Amino acid sequence: QVQLVESGGGLVQAGGSLRLSCAASGSIFNINVMGWYRQAPGKQRELVAEITSSGSANYADSVVDRFTISRDNAKNTVYLQMNSLKPEDTAVYYCNARRSSFPRGPYWGQGTQVTVSS
Image (cartoon, rainbow, N blue to C red; front, side, top):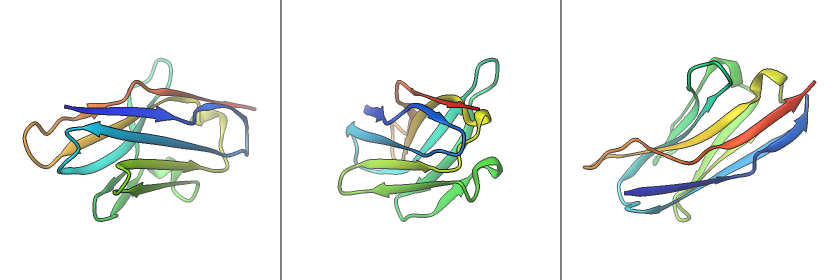
């Protein structure tokens, strides 16, 4: 099992910035992909960004050029730097991890609330 603990959410005005962190523990060997998803009220959970252990990143179109995902493999931690935040970025943000070996997951954190006021 992999445990994921997020931190860094909060309330920010439009145009502001927040940095989310997610630390993995437990069966952390062979975690190849870590990422962030979000779920707004009444909407499905969607991918925000993900990054492989080699540093290859993938972003949702809605956050390109505003959000940056990074990863510290030594600390088993993934970060999401969110700049130029918009009210539509308001959601619960969930950390996600997938392993390259059984049990692959996905594994989820408990979520952290991000609220952007207009």
